[in-house]
Structures are given as C-alpha cells and as structure tokens.
Image (cartoon, rainbow, N blue to C red; front, side, top):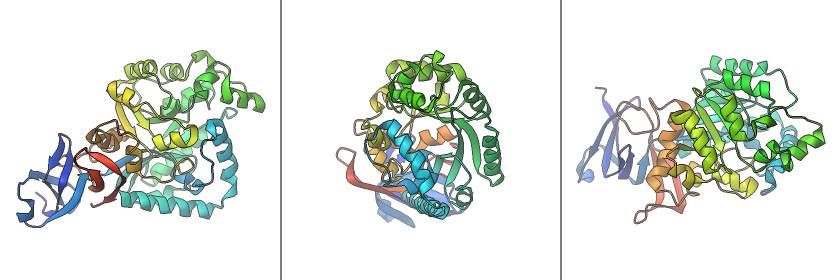
Length: 383
C-alpha cells in the first residue's frame, strides 16, 4: 500500500452510505483514498487534520459556460429567455479577447478554490482550451452546435479534435431542441457521446412546436422556417431523434412536467441525467426547476451553475441552497457522485470510495440541528 500522506477528519463526512460522524479519511501522496475509519476520539489520533464542518468529495459542476465569464453583470435580470439570448448575441462582440481569457482564468481559479474538481463545460470555440489544459479541474468540453440557417457543422468535429489533442475530453452536442434543423440535430446527436442539451428552459420551447410564443415570433422576424415542428414537443424531438443508447444530460428542465420526465426517463434509463441550474433559471425567467418532482421520480439529478451571463458566481453551494426541500445529504450527492456519473468519471471522482482520488472539500455554515445550509455557507478545497 502507498504511504499515507494526509489524514483528514471533520464533524461529519459524506460517504456513499450517508453522513459519518467523526470519521477519518486517509489519502496517499497521489490523492488516492486508502482508508475510511471512524473514531470516538479523533483528537487522540496521530497526524489527523481536523476541520470544523462537513467534508465531501470534490464537486462536479455539470453545466457551465466558462468562456462566457466576461458577461458577468452585463445582462439584466428577468428579461425572459428570448431577450436574454438576444442580449448575449450583442454582448459577444463588445469585449476584447484578452479580457475574455482573463475573466475565464479568474473563475477557473475560483472554482478550484471552492472545491470543484470537474466541469461539464459548453464550448463554442477553442479560447479556453489552453487555460483548461493547465487547470487542476478536469474539464469535459461539450462542443455545441446551433444555428437554424447553418448546414455545415464539420467545424464542431475539428474543435473537438483540437480539445482531445490537448488532453481534454470532448464530445459534440446539439445546443437545444429549438436551435437546429432536423438533419443537423440528428447528425450531431449521432456523433456525440455524452450529449448535453439545454432543455425546457422556457415555456417558449413548447410553444414553438405549436407555432406561437416568443421563439416562434423571433423566427418570423428573422424569416426562419423550422422543419421539426412535427415532433410535437421538445420531449418528442429528443425521444424521436436521439438513440436510446446515448448518455444524455438534459440541462435546466425548468418547465418539465411529470409526463415529460416519465417519457424520457423510460427511454434513456440510467443514461439520463437531469441537470439543474436554479439560480440561472431565476435570473432569466424568475422560475424554479421542479426538483421535488424529479427527486420523487428517482431519476439521476446533477447540478450546474450555468454561465456568469445569468449568474453572480460559479458557486455550487449557492446552487444547493435553492433546494431546501431536499435533504442535504441527497443534494450533496447531486453535486458530487451524480455529476461524476453524468460525465463518466465516477471511476475516480464523486465519492469517498477506496481507490478513488476524489479530492476533499470542506463545507462550513451548516445548522447541525436541522442539517440546513445557512445563508453564509461556503466551501473550500482541502485536498
């Protein structure tokens, strides 16, 4: 066995079996977890670092747009989804490339400090790749395709190949059910795995298939005709266009109903992850995703921060505060194990299992009587 380098303890430790009181985690020099023990007298143990709070594995931000970090504070709250999309399109051209990279570097460092060990990151180009190559964070780059007038998406595979050449995992993915014509959506969905699709983020997504609503009106203004309304709904399009063998992250789900969830859960089973980004949904639509519904249906739920175009920070703890109705240990599993499973990295990340190297993160600001995250709750990486 490799020599133990660090022994960590806290009031509680999040294990796959639940919360362990006064446990001790032993890691080797490579950060591999070698032993989990419990002790009634932690303070009498040798070489144990004790922390006041809760130790959890490194967190997984299952949905982010790091390259949009320069947009923090540039977009008004509550402008609705169509208005939000239009504002982003204008703001993209108003910031110099160096400022964009500096913003991304700052927030990458913040995520490292806060204990995020992996990110499912949406990419529309290569600008963040060099930064990611030198980061402690594991990034999976989702190379996103969109454009109702675009017919040639071969550039997506070139971007994915550049990512992989730098040692960064990548897959191509459709942006959403409303932003690609039929042939393009099918081709990109067939080529990528895993897929990360923005889904039911606004009411307008369903309305588009009914030839009404803000997305439909936007297409009319721009003279764009869609060829996929025959699917009847965003869920119908996913079910009818994506092979059931695909690993699928559906992101946002703000307006998902029980019928929609049942349909897609039945089709994709444990290959489906519902990714929730509640602060972004509140920012754009003043809406909240149906966490209790998805929790009751026993689907896999993960958590993301979305971009700083629609958020104040990339804090996973602040996202988890938005679901007080869900028991804290389960929310913490969403932010760790579920995200790792969604990105296919659970062999080494997401849980305190012997042989993994998940990192260790301290959470402070917990009401222990009610197991509640207090307003000032925060996280920081310990290992």
